[in-house]
Image (cartoon, rainbow, N blue to C red; front, side, top):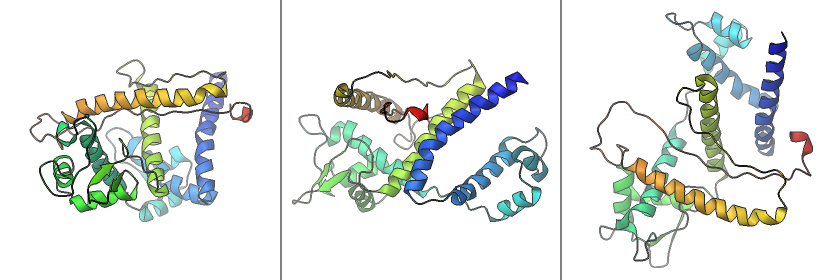
Length: 279
């Protein structure tokens, strides 16, 4: 009984820490609590139905009702109207990210100073169209350019050439794209933590951070610059390794299955003097 009480306190506190920043985003974007419930309920039911069934038996509404605490009638209603997932934003993100990564690392698209060079749209081998063909398959170059222009990753200069402004796909002008990345990146982090909780010491996934909680505000600007530079260098090194083994970039790569894997790095800071209640 005492163990269950401690577990409930810990998991309640952990969920509270997860929801606090999430609810800030929801309220900032005028999403009501009822809207949050409408989003959460079908996902809760889907996981209960498809990931927590009894081995050898088909998923059942009755079992999902027991696990979720929802009535069978409510689960049936949600299942009948559950929308299909929208994978288009993720595909757009992946294609744009591959093009930028190729532009940064591929010597065919670099200048004499080893930095990404401005590219003509279609002229020559080292053109933007050639870059897209190499790193985004059959996607039209114009469509990729419009996407990168839209999010502020490139600019088209007066002579028509295209110049890279960012070494990674990080939308600077689109709030919708930033929200989509929120869903992807937070999901990946929680999935990794869940894997480590369930897997114990067997093949844990890398999950580390470095943090100090009594820093003067004066050092943060230097740390932001240092951490950004070193993190970008590491990500570009790992991106190069992965790109050589990815079948979209190298169709000749052999092997079984289709896996998605990567490394995510994020910076955080907090003014403890202003938010003591969040700990």
